[in-house]
Image (cartoon, rainbow, N blue to C red; front, side, top):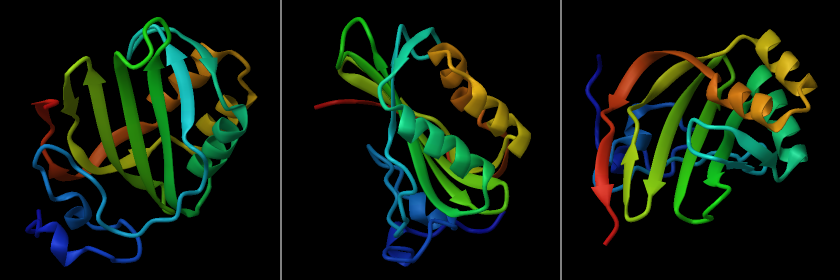
Amino acid sequence: MREVVGREACAGKPGADECCCFADMGKAVRNACEVESLCETVLADCADVDGDCSAIANPNALACTFAALAGSKKGRVSWSFNSADNPGYWRHDVDVYLMGDGTAFVFEDSYLDLSGSTMDTGRYMLNIPQHWSGCAAETDAQAQAQCLRDALTGETVHCGDGFEYTVD
């Protein structure tokens, strides 16, 4: 694996196509590189992070995200699963930086009350385009949310380890 350099080496770089865009593994990881957002963030109300989702708040954003995940554009798509029963208590956010070649850099962050955790940051293979056409045909919120959960099929480049943190 190549050496990971600090964020400052990538800051302002057009496109998030290097690990250094995500190298600041302090209390938070944010993308330091310039990326076009392809769609609005998909918002889902769910029982828990891995549980049933009862509603997708913005179906147009979901359709846009499925199309972007199936396509060959570069840019960012994202989704946020939120507590349906206790808004603001927990949230799981996923940012997917599409490379246009069936791979993407992915950053995931989960919050629960006053603590949180990030997952490993890296470049992942995306599910096959046929997966996304099936997802676009789904009308059930739980099935749609599961399609997003099944977006990735394997890590190809590891950028940084996940970590836990507390909110001050």
